[in-house]
Amino acid sequence: MGGWAFLLGAGLWVLLNSQAWAQTVEANSCVNCHQEATGNQRVDRNFHQWKDSWHAARKVTCDKCHGGKPSEAKAAAAHSGMLEGEGKKTPSYYLKMDERCGQCHSGEYADFSTSSHYKFLQQGRGPSCISCHHPKTGHTFTVKEIVASCVDCHNESLKGYEHVPQVARLLLESMNQAEFTVGCMREFVSIKEDVKQKAWVRSKLVAAEMELSNAKKQWHRFNLQNTEAHVLQAFGLAREAKALCVAK
Picture 1 (spheres, one colour):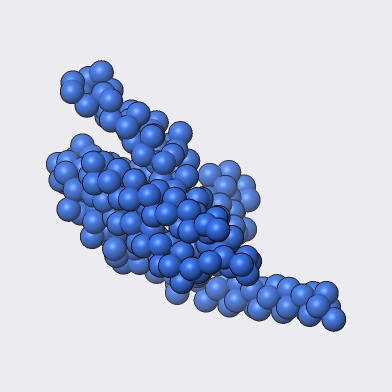
Picture 2 (cartoon, rainbow, N blue to C red):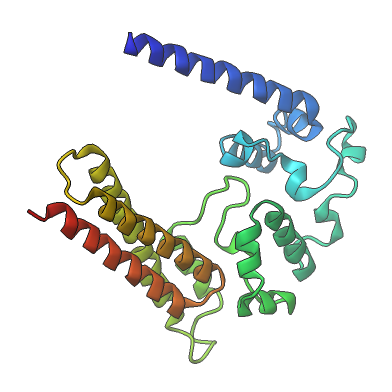
């Protein structure tokens, strides 16, 4: 019975997702047109990256980031008012694109806008959201990709800050490891019936998750020192939770 229930549930999800996709295509000329633009490799690649992304699953369509008029059927009318038309790849473009990101990712944008890097962006020489996040697939770059982005500015030409990319690498790896550790401990507690002081263990893990959340806030503010402090706190709480789990 469980297997049949799973198959029925999976089939229902596919059906509902297909219906949602069909409604998105029908209501949005950007999607309707770009999915057929197979002759243009760049447009075709960008479309399929987006189609397979979390953005597409949440119906965040092209116009939410690029502007334009998705209700118009003709290309010229649909493309009018697009953000790219206002000077693509200029500081103004990146600032406006980050504002678009902030319409959904308000917390991250609020943190980023307080950073010194954002002030540099306003001056035309700083990173933007897409320096660390792929705008079409919606995923965060790997540690290696982010460090490579840091090196664009933090190199031998920027005296006194050449070390920053390696510090960032260590912090990101530590943050990922802390998240993994906390996740493993939470899974362990959920399946083990004989864990003593389970409420205390869970409280430690909740506190660790809060520290990780604060670490990410500080990361978006580019405050590496505070990021490190919160990551270390998360590790400490996870270790305390583990000690409680194995206590006799």
